[in-house]
Image (cartoon, rainbow, N blue to C red; front, side, top):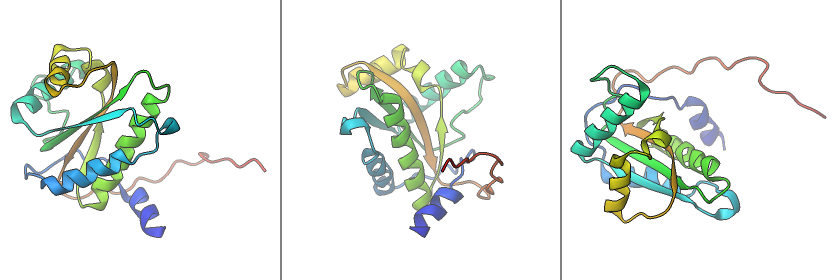
Length: 175
């Protein structure tokens, strides 16, 4: 139990990645952790899409930066060699929560495997674009999905970030 708590407490969002490829067996373990996230009534409404294709990553990067309102050339994925997209079926009333747990599990698994990760937002807005609609069509994914988040995944470049002090007055007990 202590090992799990230590991983939870030491995991940080990484914003500098090495360009080194991540072995597929490690990516598969991260994805597996996402597949076993808790979901409302065990509906398992999420889909996980692993993206390593450089052309598609460049398009996703540019779209994400545009939605973010960043300057041209900014990389909102911080040089990560792997992008993982998590989407959830909108018909599940717990879709957003379920997808968030998928991302959380994958971030913890990445940390346990010696990888860095960072939850990248704007997946919801991205889902409305032709780029994502075409991606889903090419994968044979049908239905009405909500983008929950992208996960930037790779090896940490530089020092691992220190854990900031936790805010005071965040926990209350009612007995």
